[in-house]
Image (cartoon, rainbow, N blue to C red; front, side, top):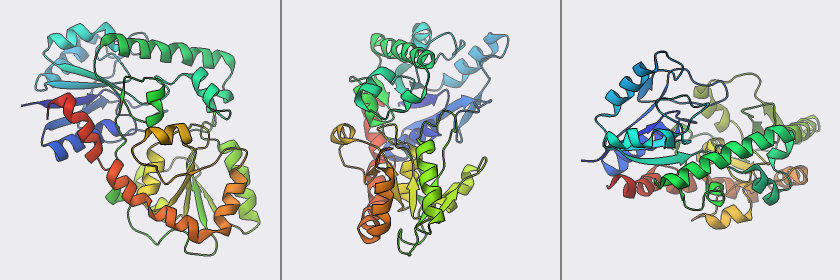
Length: 347
């Protein structure tokens, strides 16, 4: 009987959500694992198992711990090509692949974003790419690291998956493994844009660099708030994730990102709540998807015009917001993700 483990970083809680989806939809035993010292730069969620940190010395303890943990599994999906036993700052999964396969595990890889996204190609595709906010040295470093991971993933020959649809442009051999959210946590609240003054929420996960485009977004929202056109509710400081469903349900509009050419967990959560999500997906990525997401595209150059349009035509945009829960149910509830993983785990 197949069984699956996904780790070792649980980015945005997705290893946990994919594992739950496989268990729920395929009836296959699956669980996630991640380190016990989450990075300050990474949004993490619950994990089924916590493993010792990679800096633990001697490293043999971590290796023995992981070997014992994985002994009950037949399949392993490794995030971002990270090594399980060694230091992720200096090594990659391909350095250890023979050791893991000698344990009898069938191995696959899943990547999440800048781990394999090419800054050069992203900037060529998007004139407003967030990579333009970085200096040359930072971009070159990311380019080298992403290329190394892409090459390792392809050269390894293991099944490859990516968590956002735009990443298939960087790794054409990979399959899109949709993000998963627990939509029931986000449902409820009044229909979006039913009032006279829309409530707008923008919650950047990182201020510097402003990769969601907050430097463009926030001044416009603040000015519209001063004019009485909207009620802008900026999130100040760190907001516990458990509070986010209520905050999202109280909003009419969720502005996610306008510089990435794709969408992340925050956009999925906004759609699940029936809110109007404004971001930037782009035509090339939309064409690659099985269904067009009801996200309103906006760029730094037309974000103000888009917001004014939403205010002036609330009924039209309310209908788009109402499409969100259905889209999430079909694409991001876990059913589609489990189908994508079914071939890998042999379910």
